[in-house]
Amino acid sequence: QLQLVESGGGLVQAGGSLRLACAASGRTFSRFAMGWFRQTAGKEREFVAGISTNGGDTTHAESVMGRFTISRDNTKNTLYLQMNSLKPEDTAVYSCAGKLSGTNWYGTSQYDYDYWGQGTQVTVSS
Image 1 (cartoon, rainbow, N blue to C red):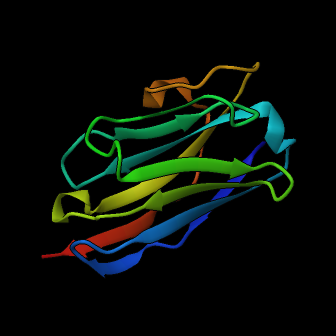
Image 2: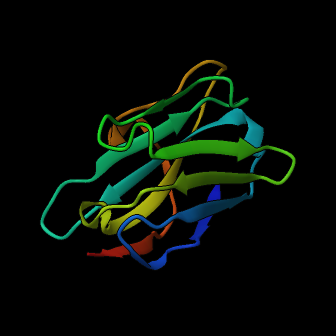
């Protein structure tokens, strides 16, 4: 089992920044491709960003491209999401997800991932 715990969410004004972290334990973190997703009430979970096991390959949803950056530190067993120029429409519960994987792969669908954190709330005020 891979345990994932998110942190770093909170309330921020539009235009501000937050950095989310996802601490992993229980398995060898560097063997897992990772992703960030977000969800608002009544809507399906939305892909935000994905990263391969060694961090060499990343992708970001068009809605966050140029504003958000996914990264990982395998020495610290931690996944990050740097969020800049936040907008009210970024308000959601953000969750990290993991899947045991080979190199150069990341998933872009929630159904690609097997392990999930509990989520952290991000609220952007206008």
